[in-house]
Image 1: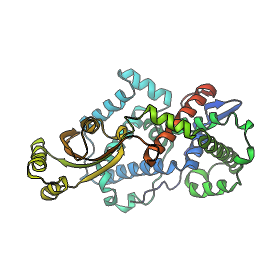
Image 2: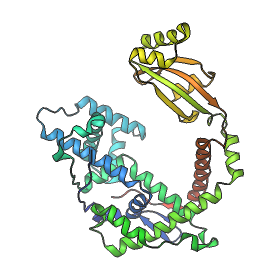
Image 3: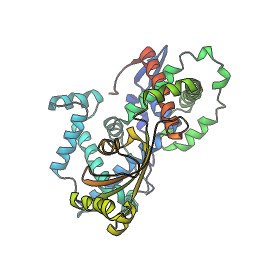
Image 4: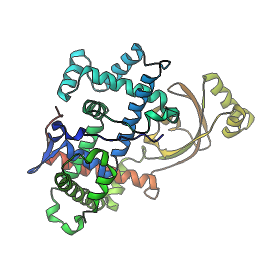
Length: 364
């Protein structure tokens, strides 16, 4: 489904000119946070998910036969939201929303959008075309989506890390951070729905500064990820970065999963054979041990190659898992190297943010 924001003047709201943080003498507003996310290519995902949620609401509102989430579902979603943020008492969520400049009604609409989006996740292409071609938004919907989902906070932390890491750029070659200005035109064209209403000169200055930060950040990240630094990370995380290749088959009941295990162990069938006979799909998982669901991780931790384990309860499913391969963490493995580089950069950013970033607060 192609569902995009058609046009929006949301960014004209004065709340998005409020300071989020400062590094040295420079202050960064929410508008800078948004532009930086566009530069990194992360804005599109937020925009698409937001537009899909609005399209789901519009489609259900236009269909008398459609079912809205009931009070119990909304209450459960609200409960999950509050406890994920340690907002246990009712007055704590009210205070949280007040600090964010949001209303209870807007928050409830956000919860409904998430519930509807989850319900339609695999059927978004079936939504009526009139609700998916273009979607318009108002500022309270935009603010609620970004703040309640935590997306705007994640964007802010990403920019803060880049700004903090740039503090010592004066000691480096500024030529490495030069930009030709083409990014300004590209960004304005790619995100015209959001940026066309803003002052061109102001937007251009901000984009150029942010592009220099981004270029400088990647230069420093490459320098920080030395062979010695990566090897140190691998030594520290040898167990959790073990590479495992798994074959997994899900069953609706524990008995069905146990029967599948018996077929493998007693009848010398492969898990793929059992899956074919059971008309079940085999799912391959090839990843680091730390990134696998805790239930599966615990089950395969002590298992050997070619060993079948289970049933493993993962949410509502009962999984049978075959350990196809298991290898110690090794920098020669692209997945391990990528994870080690990320860990080095995370540490670099964390130190820089702690030393140089002064946080302001949420928009109002």
